[in-house]
Amino acid sequence: MSGGVDSSVAAWLLREQGHEVIGLFMKNWEDDDDDEYCSTRQDWLDAASAADTLGIDIEAVNFAAEYRERVFAEFLREYSAGRTPNPDVLCNAEIKFRAFLEHAIALGAEAIATGHYARVRERAGSFELLRGLDPGKDQSYFLHRLSQAQLARTRFPVGELHKREVREIAARVGLHNAQKKDSTGICFIGERPFRAFLNRYLPMRPGPILTPDGRQIGEHVGLAFYTIGQRKGIGIGGVRGGDGAAWYVARKELDTNTLRVVQGHEHPWLLAGGLEAADAHWIAGIAPESDAQAAGGASWTAKTRYRQDDAPCTLELTGERSFRMRFAQPQWAVTPGQSAVLYRGEVCLGGGVITAAD
Image 1 (cartoon, rainbow, N blue to C red):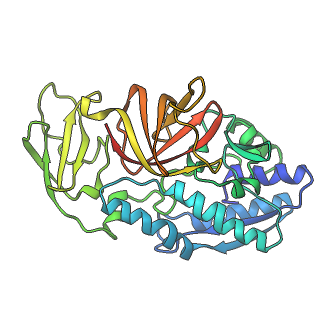
Image 2: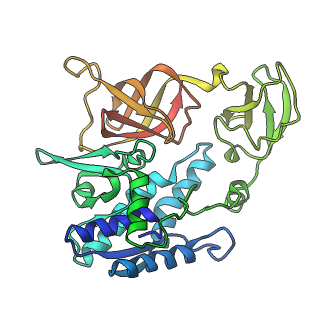
Image 3: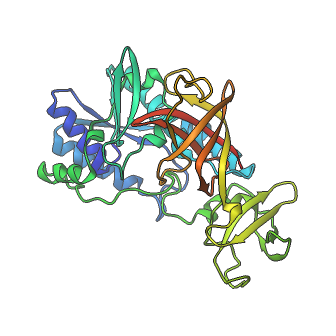
């Protein structure tokens, strides 16, 4: 129970179904958690209040050491290498559905439940991860690294509901967080300025900002502090050129410490017809057949970022844990370090970490 409305309603739904429910509040970050940007204290108070309203016990557990070792260290390694990681994906696989699950089993629990908008379906002894029914809140993208063993012991009670229905239930049963604002951003950064936070852990290494034709129009503070497709905060807002269109980060050239920027949202450098990915994880435990192997062809779609419409694609397995995707239509700002997640209809099959876009 995070203190938010989704996990609170998930607990209520389970209790109504007749389950014995115990709430667990996870603290995953300790550094500077007493400043203006961290909501841990208020979240704990909200979770405890919800548990009291529901008449269930709640326990606070500190997973900060596991989080720093398994998630934050990888986060810094990826940024140092010029990529843009998604720590929420790793947090789910390593903390919420591993450390939390292990703790719950040690307490004697049969299963864990969260407030994620996703679903689990058992079919022929195998477990499938399905999209949440609310298309605007579906979180299967962040859960694509879960295993069969994890899904077998996981429940997603609100996955069958729309967000509006969740808030209506919360109000009806008297939960004070019924209208609490959804949390946004990376969990350990909260609402704090991202660049200032990252600079505590990574050194600034300035270098040139160049246009596609090699013209220098500014100086960046370090490639780690920028991401593909970024428009704001580049530091060249006063520079004009061409038709006066906005500037976007298009490439990060580590060998020369150069940041390349282009003008216009639809510049060719921002569009990719395909990608390569590594560190693949498949929920079924085995890779799906590639298009060349699939009888009668396959119908895949993919997401290369959370807030993205499904993109029809082809799949080619290039190694034991690597693959290549090609898209029917070019995709915007495909970013190394982010996750490419594969779907067949409502079923999330798994995915990998983007290593290159082309």
